[in-house]
Amino acid sequence: MKRLARIAFAGIVGLAAYGAAAADIGYHGWGPRVGVADNPDQVVVGAHWDLGEFTPNLRFQPSVEVGIGDDVNAFLGNFMVAWYFSPQGKVRPYVGGQVVVGWFDPDEGDSDVEIGTAPVGGIEMKLDGGTRFLAEIQFGIGDIHDAKVMVGWTF
Image (cartoon, rainbow, N blue to C red; front, side):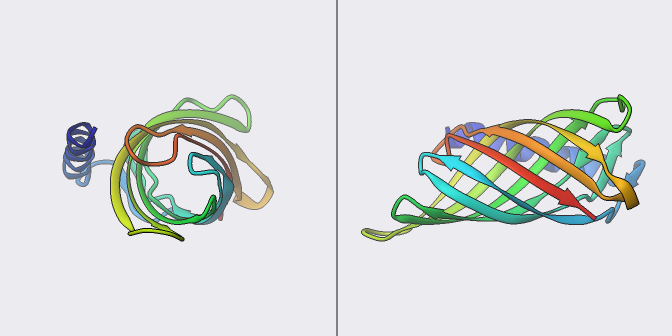
């Protein structure tokens, strides 16, 4: 699993290097995100940043999160790249993947750093005033959360 995470991370870094000279890389907003995770069962809160598109529709949106519950605290850094389909009115579905670096600190025992990957799918909806709402689901591969359901806003 760690080999798969390294390959995915190398792919994301490669896309970042290739796309840095392209279209629309740069800060395009940030926002809070909240949700629930499975294994460990946690409430998760965090923030994400819209850092633009490598090419049209292919966005880089990293995030940081804190998970609390199930006798462990989790601190996560997520490096997500997602393909945003053409808008259908105010709704824009997306699919992608992310590399997750997590520090898990259980109440009993030693803390541990884990690296994994997660396919991601969701929708983004434009709200009034330029704010965007998102709802997404993630499935973890490796020693990270098995699944997460998140909602968030981008300002």
